[in-house]
Image (cartoon, rainbow, N blue to C red):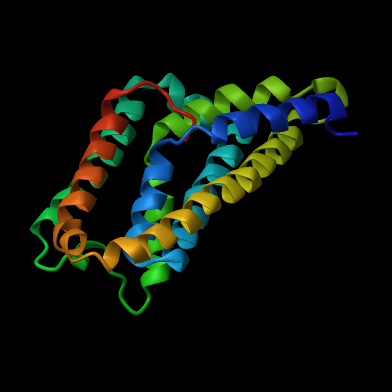
Length: 211
């Protein structure tokens, strides 16, 4: 067996415990879901977790170790991600319509998916988490560690999809009520912009986080 049942059970329990704590990605998913509905929320969830799988592959191949060993490279990625989020917030503030800043185009769902991927990929804290968390449950005596890390990362991403997806469904239902409220609709761009800016600043200045 590639991973012992004991370690696998422990991994699932630890992952669920971590995922139940809302992080920056949950804020992003909730914001998208409230503004654009269930489909956009799910698209953002899938994009975010594709980035998690990307980092899982990088960790398995040792590329994440190179990133984390280089302070300049780490800082470039960290500040690029923070700047991206802050720019999204500023764009929301400057938009004329309440939903203009994040309203989808005809290919809007793909754009939401892509932005979710970029937001998570430019968050090096994900690399910290993947590189520090997954190897704890790998055991060289059970086969190739690379395959074990890939399996664990895939399982974690699957659990995250269910967890984040629950937030998306709940937020989209709440969003329909909020958007029927004229006061919220009028002020929504400020709410959205503030969330993005706070998310960007938090990503830049706080310590590592699970997502």
